[in-house]
Image (tube, rainbow, N blue to C red; front, top):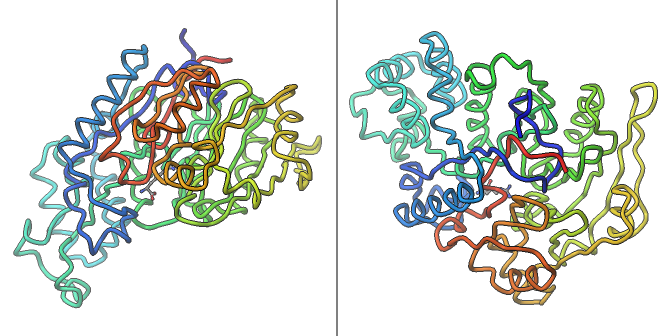
Length: 408
Ligand SMILES: NC(=[NH2+])NCCC[C@H](N)C(=O)O
């Protein structure tokens, strides 16, 4: 099946055609215990094993006929023109808060000697102070002399879901909650604007990285061609959801309702997709700990282009039935809602499934209780290795950015 548009995603579950991944790389080896909190990790993955697991993930997708594109390659293709390359470097240094002119100059010189592939790899992995020992030192550098980096690494890049999200034929290029992840969104901006696969397509930008409030892709779920579910979470703010709703309605796409899911703001539930994903026309995973506190608001498009916001009073099942026009909904609890297995498996992304077709999902091997329950509910699971990848607190859905799915 081919589409006129390079982006085409009208559901969470339509057969996955093309997806963007990032193969973990040297950025992971630049994590240290002191930096874990700032860089949003709870542990340090063993890179060699993480790559093996990630390659297995990519192979699993390819074997199912999915086209796998790598972020690194797409960025390299985008900066072929020297002017674009220079602009990316400039934006990148600003984003990395290199304000001192002499340091900036030294870094420009350092990058100048690198080919495009190496340049992007270095941006991603970060630059240790001992890599450019003679760099002119700004006051900020001296004050924090023991800090090991000139440019911080970007270890979260393999969670390609978050910095940008395709919605219909459009895309959100997100404003991330944290500085550390905000740099990631630059890559997608350059890909959309300059990569030959995307640049001439006039892709609607449904959210922009210059917005004031944060929105991350882990909170964006496309339930069908009319209805989206967006999380208000530790990472995405209520105001962003409202802005996104207005932009989507204005874009003239088929979406007419946004269900805003207000979930508890905590690390374990950082995005909606850590506690709720769609796996079939009427089946969803859910983590039982959000069921009590969850409030859902519907945002609908009014005739005069304004929006209407309503707090939904019914149960989640009833809300989903009503807005998806279904007669029954199955919510599959992470590890069956067990008090111990549930939170343990949710912590390792037991609810974070990636649908590659209706009723067919990619899941982590370590969440075997949840996986068994999925199978008992008629869901086909493609099980991937998960010792190291899971240490970054993200599962198969977080590690993938679908750009084309077949319509359901
Ligand atoms: N869509 C997701 N749930 N992404 C998970 C991202 C995990 C990453 N370490 C972060 O804290 O940002």
